[in-house]
Every structure is written in structure tokens, then in C-alpha cells.
Amino acid sequence: MKSPNLYIYNSLSKKKEKFVPIHENAVGMYVCGPTVYSNVHLGNCRTFLSFDLIFRYLKHLGYKVRYVRNITDAGHLENDGESGDDPILKKARLEQLEPMEVVQKYTVDFHTIMAKFNALPPSIEPTATGHIYEQIAIVEKIIEEGLAYEKNGSVYFDVLKFNQTNNYGKLSGRQIEDMIANTRELAAQSDKKNPQDFALWKKAEPQHIMRWPSPWSDGFPGWHLECTAMSTKYLGNQFDIHGGGMDLKFPHHECEIAQAEACNHVSPVNYWMHANMLTLNGKKMSKSTGNFILPDNMFTGNNNILSKPFSPTVTKFFMYQAHYRSILDFSSEALEASEKGFLKLMDAYRTLSDLNTSNSSSIDINAWKKACYDAMNDDFNSPILIANLFEIVKYVNALKDGKETITETDLSLLKQTTHDFLFEVLGLEDTAIEESQDGEKLTAAIELLIQLRNKARADKDFAMSDKIRGELAAKGIQLKDGKDGTTFSLN
RNA sequence: GGCAUCGUGGCCGAGUGGCUAGGCUCAGCUCUGCAAAAGCUGCUACAGCGGUUCGAAUCCGCUCGAUGCCUCCA
Image (tube, rainbow, N blue to C red; front, side, top):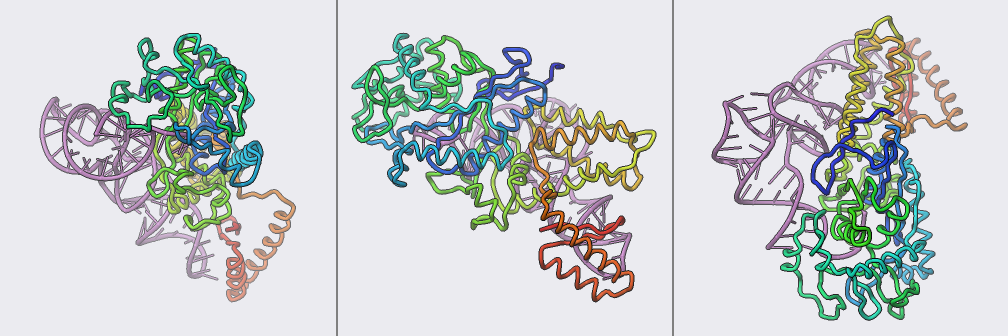
């Protein structure tokens, strides 16, 4: 493959950097996946769709990508105190299920939703509970390094000691002094030496069902540990890209860096990438506050936020019209605007197949193609890519009107490039054409009505022609009279 | 309170030290039996106040406002 000129914004350096993978032509990428204790909401999906785009584009460039995205199926404590509650256990009690039934139920839901979005499955999707052994080994190593201590069956990471030789806070831009100065007064029951320390292993309370034996106690791993265990296991001590939602930057990713550096004495990740939040009513979507929408409820229209249902592909197109590092606010108006644009774009793409070619091109397709790649090479700038794709709407119309010309070679390049970006890179789906048998029958029936209407129009029987048009419109079938005949669309 | 990000035209949303982002809406026009659809054209914005500069919406400072993190969260 030719070396692409790809630049990635690195959260660690706060700069765009040229992307140079550790191994030529291969990329290791880890993304923090969901905690499966309830249905994924649309905000969660945005992050995974952002990284789906990145995964797809890296593959499109010719990289062999190993994309690891975990499933967090071992609950984390909600609070540091002993009274903390694990969301998976809480949900299990609520729904009267075994914890692993909860996990299974919402893992399936997650996969179903991501499939509806036409997101590619990751190369490896490991679970936290499947890697308890690896996590224990890491805790042992960190203790051996003298950077963790055991207290009452739990093990904590010694942040202050780590910070003497390393830089804790380099990802999130926090100074440990500030953190100490701003420590809130906690109830004093903690086993930690310092409030900044975080748990590597927690001893299970008697009522805690999810527990595993360890050298320190029957318990469960700390909530930053699984990602370190699974990323290093499948990608090595150092790998190219680590991604996740912006809200995981601190403390989760900061702690991952500390754990990995404590174990392996090297910085684990070359490029840290953070996808920004999807907001609703100007606030982050969040399960705990109830400010969220479930994907299925927007696909069906069963919600009181949106004016109508929106398909997964339109939703995705809407998201990709904003850059992954920008906050995106979710509203019915914005979705509707995206939907109209999307349909227009798809229409133009389809028309590409019906164009006439000439001996010369008046449009510089290679320059246009380069602009598309330049956009994506600039930190995966999908809004610019989409703006470029909208150019084909103008091309198609100008070519149809004979105002521009194109050679057969250029037209096929245009078609191929558009196809690649639309379907391979953005992973969109053309929903207009339902290739079902029912669809064919419906099409045949409507075309018959179109013929009858055109006959009526030719006979100046406008009462009849308007009746056909009106009745079909009432059924959600819109007729569109064009120069080359009448087509229809289903609303 | 601390750390960080952001504030762009009616709406959404890119980007940049000097050159039209793009989409949607709206208006006018073309087409049409009429309408819709489609197409064309038009609508020139960067929170406020200072500073740097030949030139800033883009860099710097301050003010105001919003959001995220600091407790589980994509």
C-alpha cells in the first residue's frame, strides 16, 4: 500500500499528529465498550459509530486492523465506599435475573442495535469476566513493582508513589497537587492511603454474587483493570490507537496508563482518541439522569422527542455530519435536515448509473477524489467528506443537462469513489430500494396507476389524474413528475 | 472550587491569518394542466471588549455564556 498521509488528533499531545503505526501496514486499536447492564442509548452508539468510521477508513486505506472492543460484564462499584452498588447486580435484583442473564440480555441488545446501524463487529470482543486470570496477574505484577498495596483483602494502586517516577494526569491535564488540594472530604471508612488511589481488586461483600478467588480475597477486579488486561493481551504492551468516549478520559484512561506503565515501564498507547458526547436538550445523554433516547424508539418513532421515525442509516448520516470530536446536539429539526440531504445524495448516486459519457471531461474527478481523501486524512473529517460528496448532486444535474461532460473512465472513477465512501467508509445503506418480493409487486401496481394517470392527463381528464395522485399521496405514496417520466417514493 | 473544551448566518454544522464550506429552511425563477418533485439563483455569519499584525472570525489577554470531567456513565 502507498503510505497514506493520515493525521490523527492525539488527546495525549493535544495535537494532530501524522499517523505512523508501530508495525507497517498493521494497526492495533482498542476501544472501551459498553457496560451491559441496560439497553445502549443513542449517546453510547455515537462513540461506537465514530470508531466504526475510523475502523472502516483504516481498513479502506489498506491497513490490516485488529480492532478490540471489550464488553464490561463485571459490574463496577458506583461509589468507592463499602456501600457502593454494582449496576449489574442492582439490575439483576430488579429484574430478578442471574447477573449473567442481565449481561447476556444487554449484550445481545447491543449487538442487535449495532447491526441495525450497519456497524462492523470488532475483530475481538473480549469480556471482563473471561479475563479474571489476566487481571489478577497484572495486580500481582503491580504489587511486585511496589506500586500497589493490599488492605483488608482489597488492593489499591498507589498513585502518589507512581507519580514520583511517572506522570499521573498527563492525559487529562490534571496536576496531582491540584487533585490533592481539591479532595472532597470523604467518609473516613476507606482503606485507601490517599483518596487519589484507585482499586485494582475489591474484596466482595457477602451479598455480592459476582466474585472470584484471588490471592487477596474472594472478590472482583477494579474497574480500570480489564482494559489494561485485554488490550495488552491482544495488542501487546504498546499499540497504536486507544479510543473511547470523552467521559472516560479521566479517571478511566488515566488509570489505564498508570497500570500499564507500572507493569511494563512503557507508555501503552501511541494515539489516544476521544469521541465527544451526543447531547439532548443541551445536556449529555445519560442513563442515570434519564436524559436519553433508545435507538429502537427512534427507529419506530415511539418517543416524545422526535416528530417522526428516523432510520438507522439516517441517524448515522446525521452523526457523521458532525466531527467526532465535537459535541453534537440531537434534535428533530437537525435530523430532518439530514434526512432530506441524505435522500438527495442517494438519489444522485443512483442517477450516476444513467448518465451519458463523452470524449472529454469538463469536471476534474481526480481533484474531487483527492478532496475526499484529504478530508478523511485530516483526523477523519467526515463532515467535509460529506460536503464533498454533495458535489456529485451538482455534477449529476449538470451532466444530465449537458452543461458538463465526462468520459467513461472518469464516470466509472466517480461512481467507484462515491460508492466506496458512501457504503464502505461511511457504512451507509440505501434504504430507498427494498428488494423484497412485496416491493416488486408494489412497484408493479404503482406503475400501472402511473400509466393510467398519464393516460388521463393526456386525455385532459385532470379530475381522474388528480384523484389518482391524491389517493396515492394519502396512502403515503408520492408521485414525482420528471422530464423523463413519473417516479414515486414511499414516505 | 479545580481541570478542560466550546461559543459561527433562521436551524444544524465545518474550517481557516487575507480566497463561496456543506446540508436544511426561506424567497425568486425554470419546469408543470395545476401542484408536488427536481433544477437554478439569492440570503456572507463567526459571543463581547481590548491587543498583536499590512490584514483576525482565525493568534494573545480579559469579560460573559454553555458544556464535559473531578462519583458509575460512550
